[in-house]
Length: 153
Image (cartoon, rainbow, N blue to C red):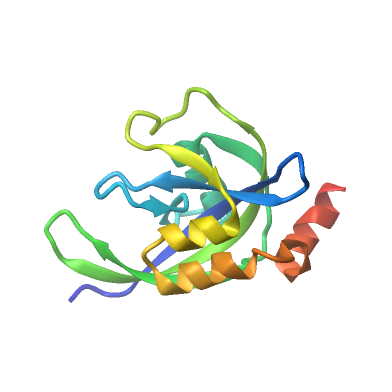
């Protein structure tokens, strides 16, 4: 079995008209299941900057990314040759300023806003569902999200 993989992800968020937090999810290219924009660490890039690039490429999301992770989750990444690599994904919060109409992977993915609770019900990974569920009531109380909000103020 291949070595464990280290990946990074952005959790793009916004507040709607009722001041409720929504999270932006994208479909995976292979199975079409709902996931966060994520990918491999990039040489020479801080992990949160790599996550910011993934959010732009996979979801067309631009905004402010936090430099402290809000959590991690594990999943099995299926490679092209069928091997499964156990991956640990570090998740960084991102507040979206705008969504591009035209972005790199727009023909390969769908994107959609969900409440954290609805997103938690649509993901396959138990750790990720738990992380999303924890944002349902008071996301601004999560220290890394609070810090990002304060930096944007």
